Amino acid sequence: MRVSSKAHYGLRMMTEFAKAYGAGPLSIAEVARVEHLPLAYLEQLASQLRRGGLVDSTRGVHGGYSLARPADQISVLDVVTVIEGEVSPVECVSHGYVTGTCQREGECASRGLWMRLKQSIDAVLSQTTLAELVTDQSLIDSMAPAETTR
Amino acid sequence: MRVSSKAHYGLRMMTEFAKAYGAGPLSIAEVARVEHLPLAYLEQLASQLRRGGLVDSTRGVHGGYSLARPADQISVLDVVTVIEGEVSPVECVSHGYVTGTCQREGECASRGLWMRLKQSIDAVLSQTTLAELVTDQSLIDSMAPAETTR
DNA sequence: AGAATCCCGACTGTCATGGTCAGAATTATA
DNA sequence: TATAATTCTGACCATGACAGTCGGGATTCT
Image (tube, rainbow over all chains, first blue to last red; front, side, top):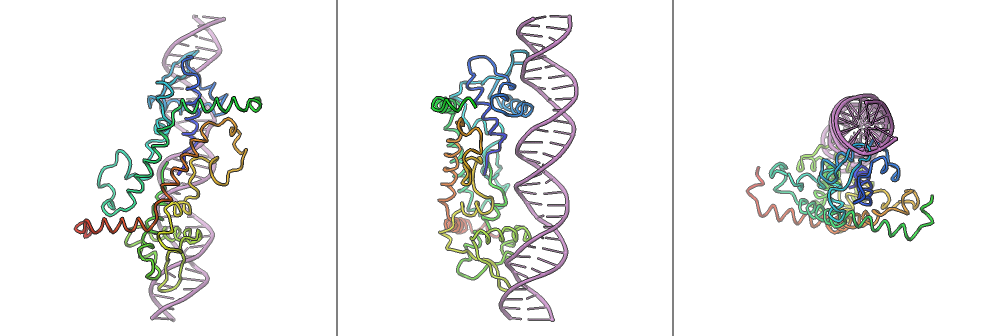
């Protein structure tokens, strides 16, 4: 029951893109610098995010990535889903599940539980948008300016 | 964001123990038979459950395992925690987290999110007890008796 | 004594994670 | 027009978790 650091990295990258939204594309070299993440790895994640339709890319010298839509219209769930695939505690509650695949389906008592769990997770993740993460971030920054020079 | 089938197996086994509660120990050979799970694997899981204090074991001929306390006092969270370790989307919100381990702690905007997520998951898993799973099970069984002969 | 059981440690194959690397394609700019 | 900055792609790799298997030991009932 954990979020991969892959998804976590992706979210951090998306937060950077959100901060830069409207000011032209942001390169992953820049993201790697400010977030201290391995550049070559971010490249892969950025590709996934693009294929998932969350960001647009611009190649060439002043290229980079920018959010495909405003930050308040991209939820954490969107990001996690693109990178990790659908959030689903067990296969039988995932979207593409084909009825009958699990032989125990009829007599399974815990499916209801897993469905509640999935809904609960989805709710939390879809309620938080990148925009909120960014404003939380600036709140933190403004409250502890002495720490930022480290 | 998924529950390992290891934990899922463990839960199924615990449900069997719950059904047999009060009627002497239940052997894992029996569990393996009715749940169609590999016996040798269940042995490992049963050991973990015992070490985690969720079941008591009896060796010898009519031995087996029985719940360490009534089924309504064991939650799904208890089971998952013993088998998978603490449920925690990211390290920095887990119980044993040492403040300062994550260098980004000060400026991390998503920690609040992960804490909400953990709480939400914990809530769902701790609200459901083995007793409820068992009664759900019997409800299902009584409603579709024709299917049980397959 | 022997069968049924739990107990334990070692082993194994497969897969996801968390990367790295080399090089090709594209584009701005000196 | 060359070159530097970028994205894009596919291949590669090391590590550890997961999902098991196996062999044998310890215990207890009959």
